[in-house]
Amino acid sequence: MTARRTHVIKVGGSLLERADAPAAIRAWVDADRQRDPAPLQIIVVGGGQPVDWLRRLDQRGGLGTQAAHDAAIAMMDATALVVASWLPGAVVTDDWRAVSRPAAGDSGGAESPTVFLPRRFLCGVEPTLPGVKLPVGWAVTSDSIAGRIACLLAARLTLLKAQAFATPTRADEWEAAAERGVVDRFFPAVAAGIPQIKIATLGEPGA
Image 1 (cartoon, rainbow, N blue to C red):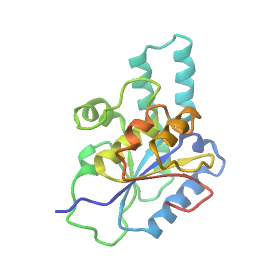
Image 2: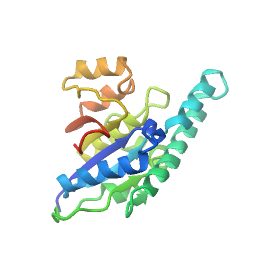
Image 3: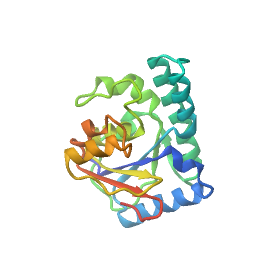
Image 4: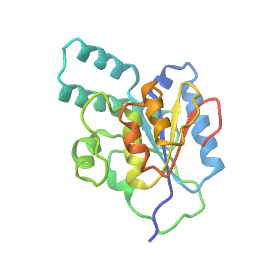
């Protein structure tokens, strides 16, 4: 048995607000799969405006840290289901074993993309796994969640965002990117364990 080649794709929640989001996201995922059909695509979706609302509510004192965390990752499950509805044939799962199991080898054919609902993984599985664990709090967003998954799977990672940014290549550059809000504050801690990272936009082809 050999490890399955995997590409983790984080779809920024703000992209869901675009009028052309269904077609644009579908076209990007299809182009990526056509360019390199062997890897399994695992799609993690940001929480978007619902999570922004939770963040504002928490800032006003309406939520505690744990409650905000729990609600935010529940929102990510909801936005993931929205994106899955835009990808014909996509597999939807919240089962970590379904995305982490080894494979006998690449078949050379394209697998359907897998849209991963992260709440079950984050609440019960992720804290038990080795490596840099994700803290509870607003320092972690879908950037670090997708990054943690990529670390555990030894997968390449694409952060699909609304605006174009040059992809950092060094630890200090990731720290600077976090300071500018390009990625979340915790992401530099997980970036070191990811084999390959690219920041991409919907206006360019797959990574």
